[in-house]
Amino acid sequence: MGCKRILVTGGAGFLGSHLCERLVKKGNDVICLDNYFTGRKKNIEHLMDCHNFELLRHDITIPVFLEVDQIYNLACPASPVHYQYNAVKTIKTSVMGAINVLGLAKRVRARVLQASTSEIYGDPHVHPQTESYWGNVNPIGIRSCYDEGKRVAETLFFDYHRQNNVDIRVMRIFNTYGPRMHPNDGRVVSNFIVQALKGVDITIYGDGLQTRSFCYVDDNIEGMIRLMNKDDFLGPVNIGNPGEFTIKELAEKIILLTNSKSKLIFNPLPSDDPKQRKPDISLANEMLGWIPTVALEDGLKKTIEYFKNNLD
Ligand code: NAD
Ligand code: UDP
Image (cartoon, rainbow, N blue to C red):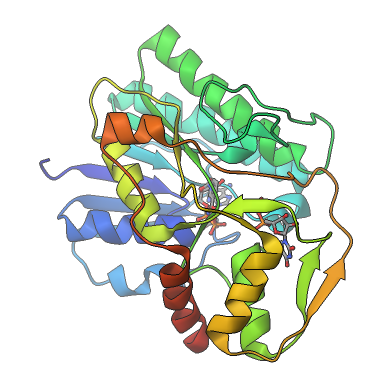
């Protein structure tokens, strides 16, 4: 794999910053584009002095022209709290963002990867979720701005491919966690760790029996880079860790690992919250030779260490 000019949209966010770091270390010329809605300069501060790293403050709903070989499209708030804060903007970011990166890819003949999501499957009736499942998504609920926005983005990717031969990759990311999540991100792993470290109540939504499967960030980034650089395979492909846990189990694990005195409290479950989620990763294994390598407990320990020094 020779060195390339690479654009990462959403590069100052949680996943984007880890991706930029990996790509810069490999010697690529990396442009990180971000509007800092949920991302932070702090996440990529350590890359600022690298000659092969550039930062561009820009909103992906507005077209951009850059000469690049590859585009990773990660720009979009990912936490329910943040994507519901301005639902209309979330849809614009997914849909207009996809149109803008696809238009750019078409013009400069770049390969473009979409960070799609397990939310494509909604509250799934098929378990574990395979890529061939079309999903069960509410089109008018509070999660729809994100879910439907991401579904339209996938449609646009495949239409630009069929119509204009754009070289696309589509990755369906399942819940991923790790260092550099924002302490106020609102997603479950960061919420529980921050609450446990502060010794305040751990907020379980609903009865805590809903399940998720948690993937450590390094495994996710490895899958993403493999997909981008695999020829003749567009996806969509699931990238996630098939270890499935209830939210209550997650809370108990985090209390144990932090040695915390926090108590569990039960709050109302937000509407349309999926009851179960677990990826079938046989396609990723077969096509990319990829499987996750970090067990939940080990990933949580690393994330807890990070939050001990980064509680704001
Ligand atoms: P994040 O919120 O930390 O990162 C998103 C980044 O996009 C932030 O830096 C934010 O400022 C930026 N952004 C948002 N709107 C923008 C806009 N209009 N223009 C430019 N930049 C904008 O979230 P993350 O977890 O790093 O997620 C990255 C991508 O992966 C997202 O597209 C998300 O939907 C997808 N994804 C993540 C997960 C996960 O578990 N982490 C799961 C499924 C999908
Ligand atoms: N959740 C919770 N307490 C929190 C945050 C989230 O119980 O403080 C639950 C949430 O209702 C959902 C699961 O944890 O069932 C995962 O939520 P998250 O927002 O991390 O991601 P998503 O629902 O998009 O998978």
